[in-house]
Image 1 (tube, one colour):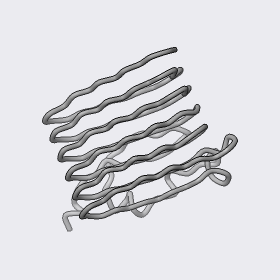
Image 2: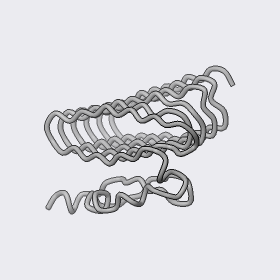
Image 3: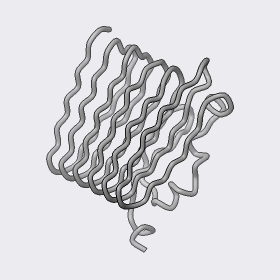
Image 4: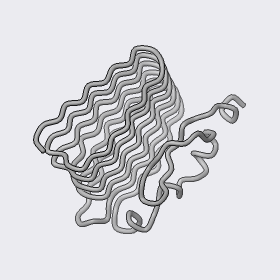
Length: 180
C-alpha cells in the first residue's frame, strides 16, 4: 500500500537520452523496456536487477567489444544498499535507484556516448563516480534527503553534460576534473 502510494523518481530513456521523471515504484518495475532502444539492444549486455530489503549489495561488471553498449537497470529498496558498477567502452546506459537506508554507489566508467542516471532517495546516501578517458558523457545525479555527498572524478573527459540535484540534509558536492 505504501509502495503504491509512494512517489519514486524513475529513469526513462527516450530519444537517446536519459532523464528523471516522477512515477510510482510499480511503474518502474513493470516497464523495463522503457530503457531500451535500437542502439543498445542486441550486441551489448542488458541487466535488470531488483533488490528489496535487508542487506542489499550489487557488483556488476559489463564489458563488450564494438559499439553495442551495455544496459544496467538497478533498483535497491530499503536496508543497507551498496552498488559497485563498472561498465566499459561505448554507448553504455545505467539507471540506478537506491531507495532508503544506507545507500552508496560507485562507478568506474570509460568510453564514449555513455548515459548515467543515479537516484538516491533517503538515508545516508553517497555517490562516488569516476569517469576516465571518456567523451560525450551524460550524467544525472540526484539525492533526496539525509546525509548526501557526491564525489565525481573526471579524467580526460570531453563533451560531458552533468546534472547534480541535492534536496535536504547533509549535502556536499566535489567534482574533480583533469586533462581535457
